[in-house]
Length: 261
Image (tube, rainbow, N blue to C red; front, side, top):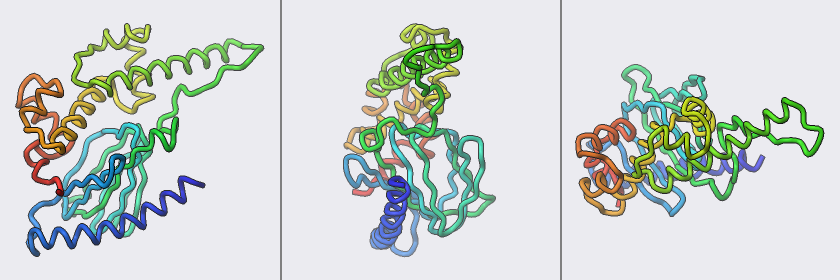
């Protein structure tokens, strides 16, 4: 109930933000709007993204410890979430829980306009996630084989979450699949399956995503593209550009131009 009320409140804020963004955009570029995306940091824990007449599709990704609220202003798009495809059009809103694998797809050649809020919820909703695989509790007594198995799954999921935090803390560090598996004491194959179940992505996908997210923050703080690439562990500029564009759908330089000061 609290999350539903919060969701409705955010949708009202999204509508107000959309009107504000439109006015700012028109003042900056006039009626001929050439920039299709604007990013702004509303606070330490809230980011706002505005899309105008966008035709961008986003591949499978997650938002770690963040919940996404979106409102469609014009046009339509499809959201693939947990294997289900849903169409959203003007006037619709959607919510993506933390660590939930999803993708955004365009509908034919129809552009869309949308406002999204990316809200940090690690403190407000501790332990809430779109993927709850492995979060089971072992009994206090009379443990059966099934309960023991559930306990082991729960312990593995906790190990995976600790591994996730290790990657988040320093995504630029080189961690191979064998390193990750050894760190939590399970086989690489089992680790990859458990990691995707808990975090929504494979370990490699997650590490690259975390590097790109960190690069975004560095660019927002005024770092150059070369500095951001070096600080996030990319071996060369072209590799950085490819990974960044695959996730953000903009080059690092285009992203810097889309930042609303």
